[in-house]
Image 1 (cartoon, rainbow, N blue to C red):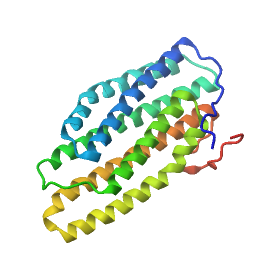
Image 2: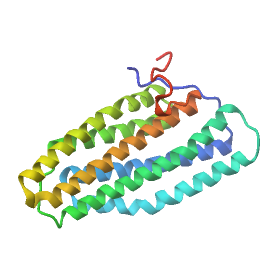
Image 3: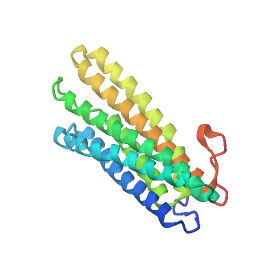
Image 4: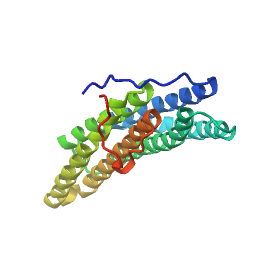
Length: 232
């Protein structure tokens, strides 16, 4: 698949450019938080996990700021179809970005909590799931910043893989709880972390769907349309 394919979008107004640039700035902060959280999770590194908490307030502020700008532009009245789709997509994407940030914080909290539990080595499946989720988030945000339809489609196609990892990891952790009852508190924290990662993948999927809506005008939520992007 050629993930370099880029949609051609007519030039926007300075106000629209400002909204988009702010959205991309927010996306960069969120991606950094997700990356920090998943890196910390792979090695149960509490010091790295603590860094995630530092960005939460700014991410929340940016969601409000960007939404206010987008609503102000919508209130001005009629505009072209593509600018309108961009603003609608922006209002959706800021929500998913903020929730991605929340899930990164949740993962960091799991790591901090694990320090007071019986020490445990995270299973290999946890790292594999973290890798898959981090790639989904990165691809979704690259699709947004680079207007890359094929990359957005790739994100949608990756969601099932993360679900498979989550199911496999859940079974493994439950077996470990049954085998070693003393490890239950630690395994529960890892299970919760896997649920947080699963939600990260869901939000990345939502963002990819909104990128497709912005660029093509297709509503592919709930797979109402086929995933194939014509011409790719």
